[in-house]
Length: 112
Image (cartoon, rainbow, N blue to C red; front, side, top):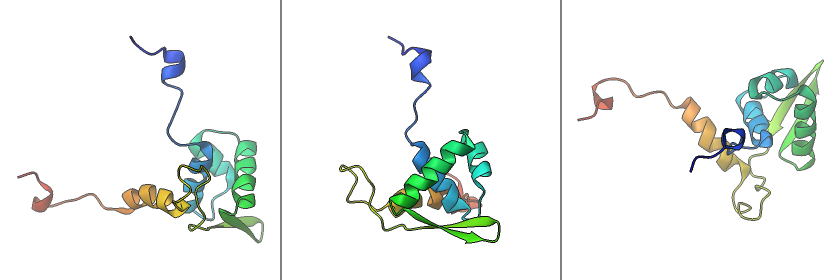
C-alpha cells in the first residue's frame, strides 16, 4: 500500500527550530531574511523561532551597529525528555562536522 502523496512527502526529520539554529551556527552574522530564504519559511516565522531559541537559552543576540550577531550556547540540553541528556551542541556537531569534512581524495579513498 502506498502512502498518499498529500502526506507522504510533507514531513521531515528536523523542525524549523533546528534548521534556524543550524543556519545561525553556520553563519553567526546571518540576517533573518537570509535564514528565511534558505530554509523556505517566512521572515516573521524566523523572528519568532529566534525569540524562542533566545528565551530558552540556546542563543544570545548581540547588536552590532544595525546588525545582530548570534552566539550559540552548545551545552544547553535538548528540550524533549527523551533527548534531554544530550546538549544541543551534539545535534549541531552531527550536521556541521559533516559539512566541514573534506571529501576524501587520492588513491586511499578508492575502494580496494
